[in-house]
Image 1 (cartoon, rainbow, N blue to C red):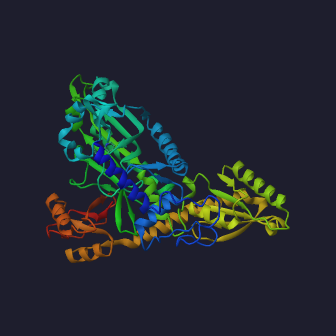
Image 2 (cartoon, rainbow, N blue to C red):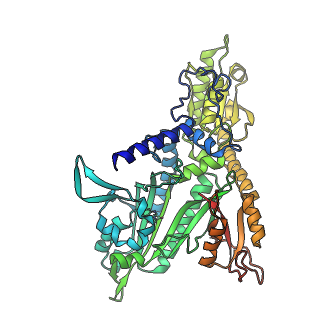
Image 3 (tube, protein in one colour):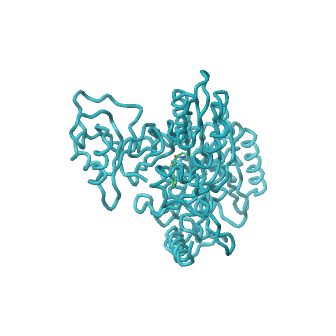
Length: 529
Ligand code: 87F
């Protein structure tokens, strides 16, 4: 990149960090309030200065920084993923990795760099993506003889080797996955997790002898993506098929899980599972001799989910006190805070905290105590609320005397006193309850945003109200393009999110809301990320 541009980028990153409440805004390391600033609340110094319902964008940036998930970086669109983020990613990774291994998918690692030659082989499909490809052009002071691309996705990196490795039907299926980073030099509105220039993902690339096998795997993987969202992140998603316009152009068809962010009224593609058909097999000559001794082409799939999942979680569950982590992905599920009083038995309280943590850990619960002596209990409450820890246990002199602990839920602030005697069991149950409640509340809010429309006027009305729109559609590409054009505005165009697999019955003679032609399916529409 040229020097001038470089400076521009650095400036942009600075502006981004500022927007996030400084990026550098420290969580008040010495525990003291900073004094005059509006956002400094009570003695804690930890409050958010933006409210989720009032200023969503600023709120989001502030939450991911103050919750210690992200640190802004001096390159626009690039973010530091702090341990609080990585522990969530690792939990989801562990789940998915075990599941795909059950499906006999194997992990591998291909290089980060792509030679321009192979990238060009995919040029028809890459055309629209080309501006996002980042290139290495120099080493030290000298220009590289041939510039080298950084992978934005790995089809072109991997498939030449699929062509080499697949000879006969006995080499099939070939099912590989890699956990890696990719780079897409986005230009529009970078947002931590949601739209970043480098992100982490898994990308699966599989090849089969038959289309039937490929079709089956597409849905198996999509179900794993649904489970990540619904069972781990407590976010309801819609499984469905992308329109011809919105599918991966290089593939045959694209399936996705779609989430919704009620505050902004935007849909968000959660993960995709594509059947590539034989398009890449043709391009990369991935042929094999079938069991009849004939030459045949493989059928391929590719599928991915990324660290975007974490951004969706923050947007859906976070509140005005900060992050709200679903227990299944929280690296600390229970934070134990000693609440000593002047003349109380401080050592006794500290010992009870240690015992509590040990008891919970022994029961497989991820619990920690916050023994820091330079912060007040109130500061610690705010701190761990900001970080979204699902349960807080407070132990003070009264609790000690009564052989009980006070448990406070992050999701609804409910306070429950639990006898120390059967602590682990009750905390385990509570974590399950919190997980379920987060999902239920998110689903309620999402469902309340779904609007069924039948006419263009109803559609425009619903769009104005930031709804997730379900409409009968004729499934014609020209009509979708037309809807996009007619809804283009400051907030961005409305497009199809997916046609849900779970289709309500189309009434006899139902017409497309946009074209008035006979409708062939129900489709979700909305603005999206
Ligand atoms: C950006 C630059 C260059 C998306 C890009 O979804 C190429 C691309 O091919 C590109 N952005 N895509 C589509 C990715 C398709 C597919 N790849 C494997 C997936 C799942 C994992």
